Length: 409
Ligand SMILES: Cc1cc2nc3c(=O)[nH]c(=O)nc-3n(C[C@H](O)[C@H](O)[C@H](O)COP(=O)(O)OP(=O)(O)OC[C@H]3O[C@@H](n4cnc5c(N)ncnc54)[C@H](O)[C@@H]3O)c2cc1C
Image (cartoon, rainbow, N blue to C red; front, side):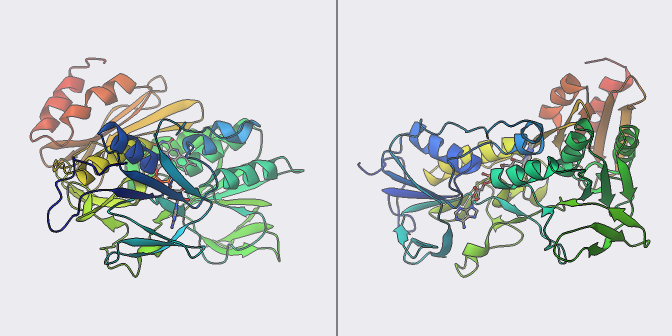
């Protein structure tokens, strides 16, 4: 294996002979594939604390739960000459020695490092009882679907984000009673705004979900095993299975003593570089996206792929900014919701169609004179047709004109 000729070298970044990727999942795999396709011929090591080769997480809150299927492997054999170090995590990073220490005590040196450790499910205090689940890994999802096969399962979900809503939808389809507790007045208030959240809550209730919006959990009941949840209005939700879907936290504990900039994620520049020789990608990476005027992480499947590609190219010497328009989908109650862009700090939401309009919904999000986001249910073409204009100056007026003239795309 020779050294890569693509790396610019220089004082700060030695030529790349050994790239280490920490995090053996979607973003890490995408970076590995790109390094090879862009001509990196040096040594490539991929470290992952799960025992599995990279697999797809989206099915874990959807089809996986109602079948006995295995997980969907992402097919990583196409990454030539990669050394997979699986079932062992990185415990620390020494950027001076350029070495990653593993939980089994080994150290792995690198010239170039890709941080792709993703996020972990947020765990709330008091929820450490038998019968409480989080769903992030295939092991988590397997334990949950086994629990669903017990006698008389009664599920309570804490947090009505995308993953929570999908799990609730699966329970409904399986005929299992499900209560959703959401602290905001409507589900998705923070991510989609209250107008769209209100539309979705009506839908959940129509499908039989017992929705307790505007409430929080004051106590987890039961001795060793959970028997229910007491809410802040003193009502009690009877449940022998509880799913915590209260968001996620970046998996950066192993970087705490490294000196790398951390702030609810690994802080990158606009090219996804953290410091020379180190890039980050996927759910863990926080970067300034000039297109949207935002500095944040994005926890979406597509972003894990494209940021992995971009970070790999940056490591090899490219210097383009990563100005992407995020896209996420969610499958719930028999429909696909799609969202592009962002809803953060929106000034206005324009509802072109609501779920009462033949079960279709299209919401556009304005900030200043720009279209910053679009959300659709059964309006796939409309949502995707707007992707290029998201974040562009003056894009709001043209988006509204397109829909005010009722051009059904
Ligand atoms: C249940 C579920 C459903 C989802 N559904 C959708 C969907 O419908 N649409 C959508 O757009 N997105 C969805 N997502 C989000 C999408 O799957 C993620 O955005 C994507 O998996 C992020 O990839 P990643 O590689 O950045 O991180 P991850 O997939 O989290 O992978 C990070 C890997 O790093 C490993 N790791 C962590 N710390 C260490 C360490 N110290 N050392 C070594 N390895 C470590 C982890 O074990 C993990 O394997 C879903 C996610 C989940 C969990």
